[in-house]
Length: 397
Figure 1 (cartoon, rainbow, N blue to C red):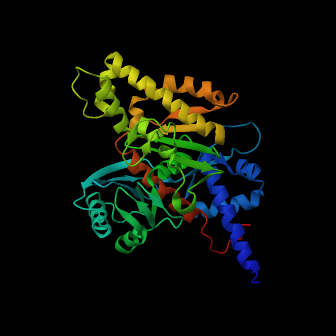
Figure 2 (cartoon, rainbow, N blue to C red):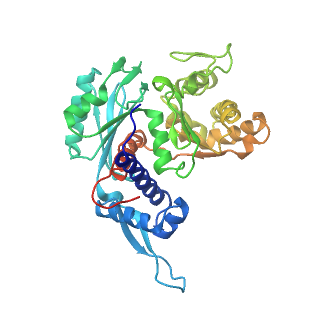
Figure 3 (tube, rainbow, N blue to C red):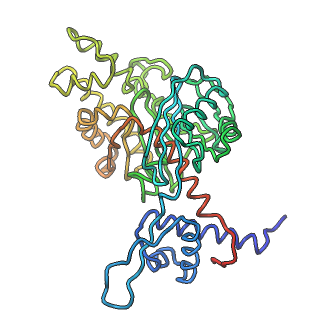
C-alpha cells in the first residue's frame, strides 16, 4: 500500500486550513484574525501566516479597524476581495444562451443574449465564444455553464439532456479547449442551489433545499454544505414525483406528477378550462396580471396551485426536515398569489411541527437569475481553487 509522504500530508493540511480560513472570512466577514482563530481552533500564528498569504495573493484585504474595546490595539477586520477578478456564467436552453458577467461575489456587471440556430455541441461552443467576446469577457478567470439535464460529477460531461438532445457530451472539455479558461458545467437547478449556498439565502446553512417553478419543477439539494447530485447527476427530479395517478397528464412528466399540476404549461391548461369568456393568456406572467387585477377565477387557480405546492413541499419536509426551502424560478413571479395557501397546506399535512419550523424564502426573480447561478459556479470554483492553492516558503500549519 502506497503511503503519502510527510510533505504531501503537510500540503493537504495546509490547503485545508487555508480554505477553512478563507471560507470563514467569506461567511463572517468583516472578521478579525482572533475571531477566526477562536472559531476554527487554530493558533493565532497559523491564522496570521494564512491570512498574510491570502492577502499577498489578492484574495483577502484588511478592510478597517474594529470598534475600540478600551483595551489594547484595535483588531484589523478582514474581508474577501470580490473585485479581484471577473467570471462569467452562461444559461443554455434549446432556444439561446444568456450570459452574465460578475465579480467574485456573483454581482452582475453586464449581461447578454444570443439565439441559437442549432444545438449541436460544436455550434453551441462557438455561440458561447462569440457572446463572451461581445461582452468583453474573453479573459474571465472562469466560466460556469448551467443547462437542463443530468451532468456527471466531473463537472464537464452532460450525461443526458432531452431538451438539447444530448447524451454523454463532454461539453465542458470542449469549451475549455476553445476558450482556455477553467469551465464547470452543472444542472441549472443545482447551479442555483450552489449560488444560494455561497452567495444567497443558504449562506451559513449546512443543509437546505431549492425548489424552482417555471417551465418545469426542479429541486436542488444541499447537504452538509455540498450539492447532492446522485449517480450521474440524476438527483432532484422533483417535478416527476407522482401525486395522483389519475391526475392530469403533461408531456415529458407523465400523469399526475407535480409538474403536471404546477408547471407553466399546467397552469395555462387550467386557465383555458377555468376562464371562459376571457382571452387566452399568452403566458403565466399575463395570467398572473389577470389574477392580480382582481379576476376571481384566476386568483382561485393560483390558490389551488398554492395548495398543491404545499402538499408537494410537505413530502420534502417529511423526508429532509430542512430548516430552509428557497423557492425560485420564473413561477415565483406569482408568489403573492401562491404562498398563503402553500404555507397553510404545508403546515396542515406535514408531520408534527416540521411544517411550521421550515423557513420558506422566495428568491426575487430576474431575467439574469439563471445565468447568475451559472456565474456562481465559476466564482465559487475560482475562489476554492485559489484559496486552497499552496506554495511558497511560509509554513502555514
